[in-house]
Length: 429
Ligand code: HOZ
Image 1 (cartoon, rainbow, N blue to C red):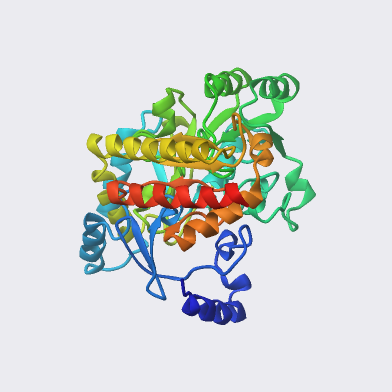
Image 2 (image 1 turned 60 degrees about the vertical axis):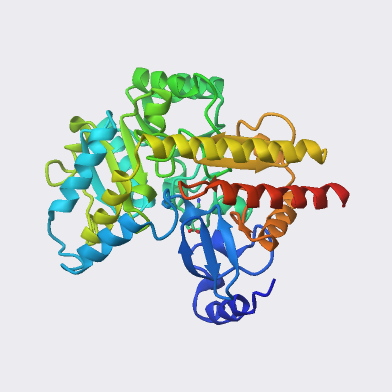
């Protein structure tokens, strides 16, 4: 397959953009080779600048729940754009989207819009610290909460892809206030709270981890975190930037029945445009300026184009959508497991509605240590075999496959056929 135009664009990009990309995982350092530059997306398909077409499982890293160029979202953005791109002042559509979120998330009385997941998580821990008068933040190894200083210890996503333990430039004085625990390990969490509970301001977790691949919570784990935080007077923050509106209309918190104090959202609520949000009960949210003294602000926050896109997206997510998304995810997961068995390959496929991950290892993958056992070289070869068979997966063994409502029978069959051939190649080499 020819990708000459992508190569030419990369050469140009490398002269004016660090690494040629605006977010590091896109550079293909985790899998080798040249990043593909895309020209267009429609439904479950992407078209690259050389005219090749791929079934897309990145979905812009999550927001494209209905596939690319979804008509209701495109129409909403086009209509809104004709009335002005932004005012830096309140507009009705911000209220509409906030109401739609509050209606679906029982833990959220109020929501503040920001422009990225990173802004949302930064604000969440500021609020937790202000509310408790404590400094310590607990996070989990392999979870990723954006690139603010406090979160760059043993983080997932790009840091795992590039093999970086954390980032230079984070002051020791900041890093010392972050404690990192193993994910899905209730005993480790209990021990940390026994020893440091009265110093912990907040605990932030991806209720389904999506940045070390997809790693669902063990039974009872989220409940344990809830109890520990409540008993210690600490704030429990669910980072639902990925899972919000994907695994359930009310997020992972509704799916698993565990209520956090604060929730961060992003991706789907912007319909594909840049967005983040922070929500929680009144008592906490009213501490944000202008009602309270916890400062947070943003010129582009609540941008009407973004709000319109998000509202159209959320409005399209009915029961039938979630039924289809769950079925498609399960068909893909089982199909990949079957291919693994047929070719005698050690493969574990984790999944939760709309998310799945293929780990080249046998046995359960429940935390980062299990993820690290998987064969990354197999993933690299799998990725390229799939790419050459017109299937675009995340260019990293540590990201999630995102399924959308636009993935139908034809896409599933095309994908499983490609997996079968890719696994045959892995098995014989
Ligand atoms: N950190 C993002 C995935 N978890 C990657 C974002 C991007 O490259 O667009």
